[in-house]
Length: 249
Image (cartoon, rainbow, N blue to C red; front, side, top):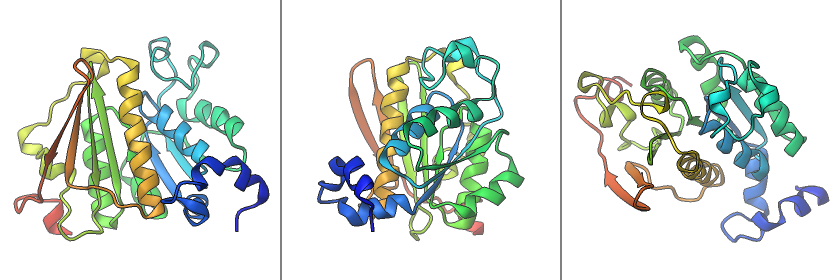
């Protein structure tokens, strides 16, 4: 049962018929892992903290740099050279002290992934490199954990939900087979506009809240955003028989 303070704090969410008090209780009892606390991880973590997700594990081994401040909105000049996950946790707790924020001040690797991913309800990929995304995809498929992918460069972004609890779910490697070398573009090589990250991160947070509260989520659909022309495109993807990840689980 929600406390009177929680009912007041989350009242604007609770009044939504798809959320209600039951949905808010599900959020309070839920746990998520956010991989990467950069331009996507910052707004995703802010949205989920504000929404009342009970436990949020954030992982990042990088430190804040002056070049991050244009888009990583949790950080300030005083945070430069400090660990991103530690800094983010301090700011998030100020927003909602009732949330359990666990900090992993390292880059996610196989060992950390195998330890943390089985503990959570949803994994959110906010990393900026494909090697990490392939790793998280593999472990999520293995442990049947929903996986919310986001990426953005320049004026463009993409978002995808992978739900291995469903028998027909495709995975990230079905979409980008390692043999075909998925593009390695990132903000360091081609640049990025901050609001594009906020749009993609908002979609990731929205999909995560829907997954946690039992609202139907469209999986096997790649959502592509063109910020220059303000257009969305959707592409259906399917599980590939040749995928070495899907077909060995």
